[in-house]
Length: 281
Image (cartoon, rainbow, N blue to C red; front, side, top):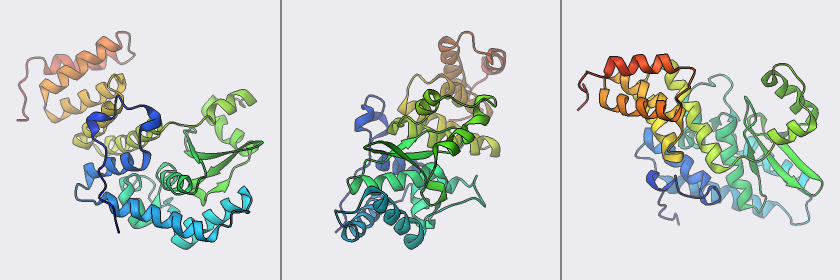
């Protein structure tokens, strides 16, 4: 029997400790913005069912490597989750209900599914906000195992990780210390904010300023003083003709970032909307 699930309140997220922020439920909350009729309990029940099926097929004496192989076989081959390389920028890849329904996603959304299932099995899988391509990690006795959720959860060697990060370090190979810093676990808040930023970037590219503003607003629900989100929401408001909102956000942005490199752009928007009335009511 499905439980009646109550998703978090957006207005309660900012003061919530990262350790208390529910990753799966808040990811579904993000999806509710686009799909307000989605039934969160269906997807949470799906995760519970996956974990229960795996629990029956994973004898306790299996070592961690054998368990990972079995879990990946189940999620990626039996259930059919897959990285959507053909339509990577499809926003549905970032909305968790669509990821469950279509079995398609990008690294970070597939990671949320993988983390939710494995944590129900007592395996403390953690996200890694790796540059360019979100990964997951599992602490083990002698270190960590890093996995790629976009590529059927396969393990990624440290040599490959080093190669992957070089383009993001101006062509320089990272030291061991730098690499381990990058591989530190991402908090739920960091993961959720990266999911929203991915959506915002897609909508920005499409010129969908209403959804850009919504994405920036959701970032501010998670981190109220995030200057870049204030700027982005303010500019989106300006594009939408919502002058009051644009002025408020951009003025606050300049107070937070008085030496911002984009200060001229922001001031131009402020000047343009300083005497305009709202066209949105």
